[in-house]
Image (cartoon, rainbow, N blue to C red; front, top):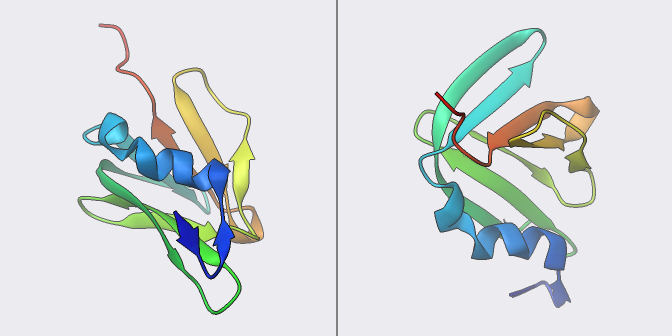
Amino acid sequence: MEINGKTYPMWNQFVDKADEFKGFLLEDHDMGMVRVTKVTDITLKPNGKDSAFFTIHGEDFDCGFDVGHGGIGSGEEGWLTFRGYANHMFRVQTKEKPL
């Protein structure tokens, strides 16, 4: 997918695999508080003329960032951890936890 004449392979891979994340948990870690919802979609859309905005959509809230200001960091096994503006952290479950 091309946005503003650019491609974003790293972020497009999540959009292409959005169905694999649907129904899994999205956790928003902000200022010592944690909110949890279920993933409903993942999108990448234009953000101004020169960039794109990556969003993980949830049933109750969304988390995302401009691709120029966010990235993937280390985290707990079974989760993908993202960091956005001002080191804001959110993560997405990648597999169900064993019982």
